[in-house]
Amino acid sequence: MASWAVLTEQTVWISPLATGFTVICDRCAELGETFPSVHATLSLEHLRGTIDCPRGHQIRVERDGR
Ligand SMILES: [Zn+2]
Picture (cartoon, rainbow, N blue to C red):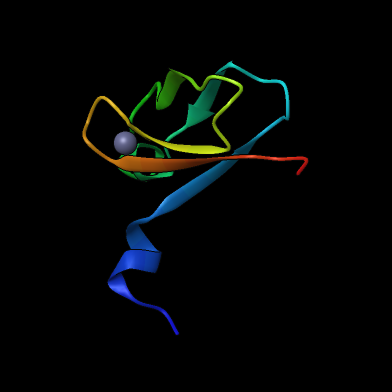
């Protein structure tokens, strides 16, 4: 059931109490970026969010530990 959305969408999981974190953008890594990490924040009242890497790739963030 692969689709364009599945292929391009990235989801990262963060720990239940994380408010600031650094994730790796897989798309940038595939493109050969030497430093593909993205720093982002998500306040504790949010269970999920969406961030954009510097090159415009969307990364979904899901808080673990429901
Ligand atoms: Zn990227």
